[in-house]
Amino acid sequence: MFSPKTTALVQTTSHAAQRLSTLLCFFSLGLSTAAWAPLIPFAQQRLQLNHANFGTLLLCIGLGSMIAMPTTGLLIKKLGCRPIIAVALLLLIMVLPIFAASSSVLIMCIALFFFGTAAGSLGVAINLQAVMVEKNSLKSMMSQFHGMCSLGGLAGVMTVTALLAIGVTPLISALTICFLLVLIGFVAVPNSLAKIEDDDIHSSSTEPAIETKVKAKKLPSPLIILIGLVCFIAFFSEGTAMDWSGIYLIHDYGVKPAIAGLAYTFFAIAMTLGRFSGHFLQKKLGEKNIVIYSAICAALGMFSIVAAPVWMMVLAGYALLGFGCSNIVPIMFSRVGRQNVMPKAAALSCVSTIAYGGCLFAPALVGIISDMMGLTFIFAIIASLLLLIAVLNHFTQVKMAH
Image (cartoon, rainbow, N blue to C red; front, side, top):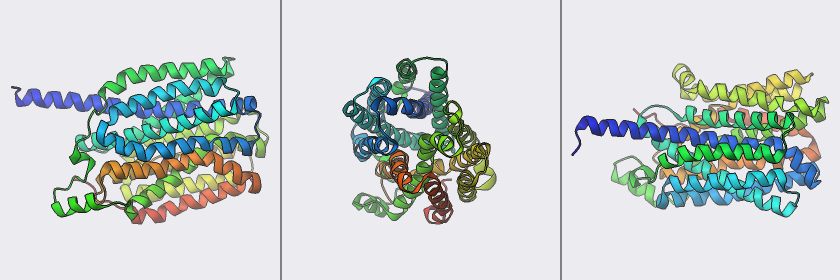
């Protein structure tokens, strides 16, 4: 019915639409999750909770996410990515205004739980979609996708901070982000993957022995667990930077609250630049080397934050941390997409559950541990864990696709 040229054009247009959808979905995840960060002090004041109690409250995000992520992996097999992305965006739009207005601890608990559910589901769905789009395009795109998440985060934190600084109420600031999410949803959702083929969900290998082995596997393989652990450490660092960098500047250096957000801003700018230059850096340094150099750079940044004599050096430390963390997670997710030891949807779900757990549980864990030991102590531990990534990199190698 169609000529080969017409079919090729339709496929190219379809791939371009799927790529745009994936980019926008990553942007929306960053936008919505980072928009919450500037609202934290206001929520804490309204709820009248100390750091330790507020940190415990934040565990609701992690709980929602931990339940949602494994479930999402199973739902995608039946429903595809599109309905998951649509529902997750809708949930985010519903809960953000509650963060800005509610003074009830119970309502905030429920809202945070659904926030974690939405962020977790969206994370699994868009990372699987990214793996499929990258596979179909036959070129490295994961750094670009995760770069859009960082860019969305930067847009979220800067937009809400700027609106609050000029006197706009937290509720109107949150509704502004919700309006942007609605616009993104109208473009992104229709072009998301409606269906994930069995060939995509399972190993791309055509060898029957490997296929049988993949289907028979019940537990995650050591490779998948180690990849998840690397992502956990990177995301734990990111979550700590988002929620505790401002408090660290105020508490340890006496910086005014109005400029405490500069620490996370420096981190987010460096991470965004790192991710958008990721493809170039991979070509120059090679995948194995870039993970090692990134881990060293991030650890150096974290040690700088701990040892800085003045607060301006803390900003430089957060920039190094952001640049160092920028390409670790995208490379690990690409490796999940190339491996043949587990079905891709199950592997992505497993890695996402471990990885995003780092980002979501970081605020609570740092709050509880720092209450006993101090922020400097927990930051030094994170710096040591970042160096461990350079070692774990050797055990997470997956052959590059040709």
